[in-house]
Length: 373
Image (cartoon, rainbow, N blue to C red; front, side, top):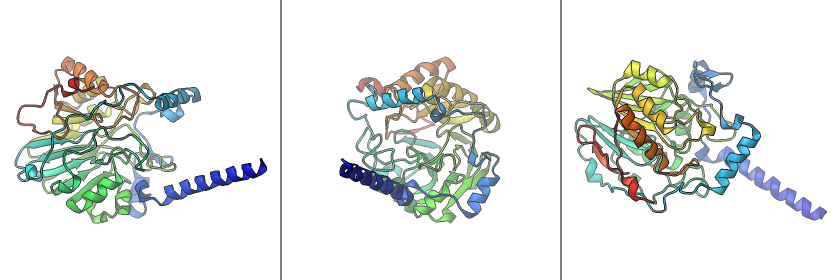
């Protein structure tokens, strides 16, 4: 028995030690800010008591009573019926040639979840281009993408003017995707602290601009503003809230667009709407919610209200249709939002994954999910 206990202890030590070494040196976990970036973080109004904080008090699930956390964990282990579709979602396939002439106006292509390729007056902006198969630092653990393939291979994507990142969670910032996109992207715009990850992955520092909330930048005629969100950040065990999270305002000519990233509902939507609205298009999260983390992810009904607060015209829901990261049925987000939208006279755009549609033409409104189990 003593020999068995020594052997078991040795195995545990090796596993724990190996895991710690893996997290310390594996590139997908990213890196910590240093130098000028760290100085800017420490001077930020959002950075208090050694971490970034939301404007409003935002209780996290790990602050909940122990029994509540056990119940949530048990539900995740047991699974939720219908959390994943029984078949692949319908998808439109894209070709290189589809992007040869971007032209004027706004074109939008949803890749599922929060990954959106925008074409604004000839500029190509890819927001939160998480194009990997799992929202995870490793290939064998974590929620797997509903569809095996993307609408177009990453290698076949056209050159990108801008990659826009809202925060550093794995379902928004993917190591493998950045490795494949960095050579074809002119510039990266990120919230404070996130540049350290990109530099660690080989993106030249002079191709990255970091912004704090309410800071602005211009790039080849495109106006960008980093605006508040109510969320959190972190990729490892010890970096919780060491990088900032944000939403984005994009303006070009007469077009004005809002990309929400991840956010719980709060007063910042109205503040952004008053400062930068109205918006021709808002892209807001509507999925992966639960009462246990209601302060950092909106319920679909709140998504509709956020769009109204922003003074938006067209709403395209994001953060659904690719991964199961919560405990609800995969259709629940879009069904609830589709019911809430008419109550606010909201024009809802519901494209297929891979459908390239124009904001100036007829909106995609087909309820395609109704025919998918």
